[in-house]
Structure formats: structure tokens, C-alpha cells
Image (cartoon, rainbow, N blue to C red; front, side, top):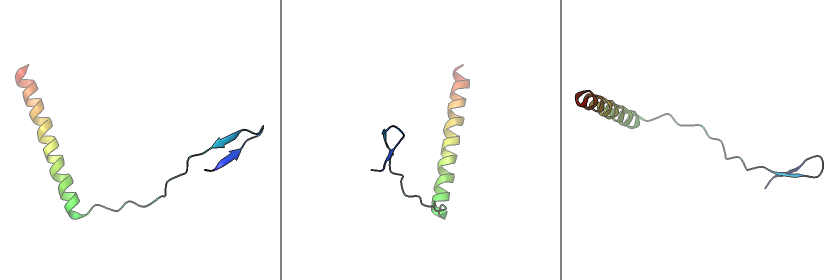
Length: 56
């Protein structure tokens, strides 16, 4: 582990940093899945709002 020594002899222990990498853009099937899940989430929220309005 990488230690550094400060003034006065104190040691600091720093965590090792993870390797950096570039994110890959989503594929067409991933985009379609995101679109479908977004639509389902909107339908769920709309349904919950309808239930809340009808109950109150």
C-alpha cells in the first residue's frame, strides 16, 4: 500500500485508485430496453396517481 510520511514522522495510508476506463455507448437493444422500462415506470406512476385521486 502506498504510504506517505508527513512532517513529524506520521504515516498516511491512501487507498489504491481503481483503473479508469471509458464507458461504452448503449447498443440498440439496450436503448429499446431503456425505452420500455421508462414507459412502464410512467404507467406505474400514472396508475398510482389515479388510485390516489380516486381514494381521496
